[in-house]
Image 1 (cartoon, chains in turn purple, cyan, green):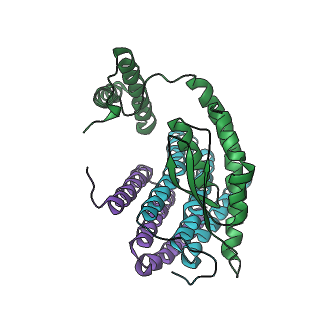
Image 2 (spheres, rainbow over the protein chains, first blue to last red):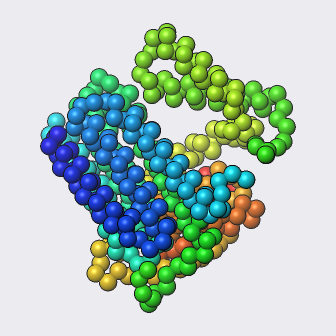
Image 3 (tube, rainbow over the protein chains, first blue to last red):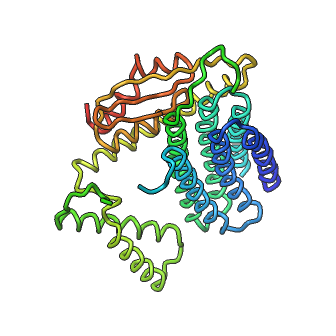
Length: 88
Length: 109
Length: 175
């Protein structure tokens, strides 16, 4: 079972590398923001799988926190791109 | 034990398939809005399936600490609410800034 | 800068907001920490009380009619929605993997009969989660939705069939 988790983790790393192409090339800033959001969501799942591989229950707290940080970061970025400023 | 292993493997495999579809859609589609269609949905479902598989694995291999399964359930619900909202916010910002959608027959952008 | 709509809350709504916020915060503390001895419970109670006193008007607004019935109907609506998500994701997978990529995007707009905050958010989330459509803009006064659709079938499911709007209106009883 643990070896299957390692294989799944490796496949997730491959998908992250595929998304990096869009983050580098993507014409304009919106494509890049979308790609970074996707990479952040995939990192959350990668952290949970690593928590099971190394048998450390602390990784789940870190993944919950990072999911919230990624969400709020994307919202703040979109608000800044739309208005040109953060506060009103 | 063997039946649980088979169920967990099927769920993890299906989740992995959908995440690949999300990444390939990000590369193949011709426009910003269509790319977000691929990632905002297939990504969320793929992650949901992987986390559901891990919850079942945890409940049968570590029955002494059920609170970790509750933590993973909170993560599942949070991803299902947060990912579509972030997608919608980015699409709204791009639309208000004037990015035009792609019609059939144009070149790639 | 005004927060919370600017209207004055009387003492009953304030007490209700404080109690609900305190119970939700304390429940999350218990679920996420895992320790149930006296020291951690007391510290959890103090932290939840401080958070509830400072920001009780962000989470709960007023009493809300028939909240229990609406929550129960929401729990019944979620399995149908999950089944629709799984079914339609196979459709998007087919469109991604097909060598010709048969997509034909268009932007549509339609009106619904929903007016409340929670109902509009539920419908917008459901529209974004079922593949084929993404919510672009929501107008709360008239219940208008601007939606970007991936193909004509997905657009017709919202303009002609209107299945999802009827189901959400059934949950929140806002025909």
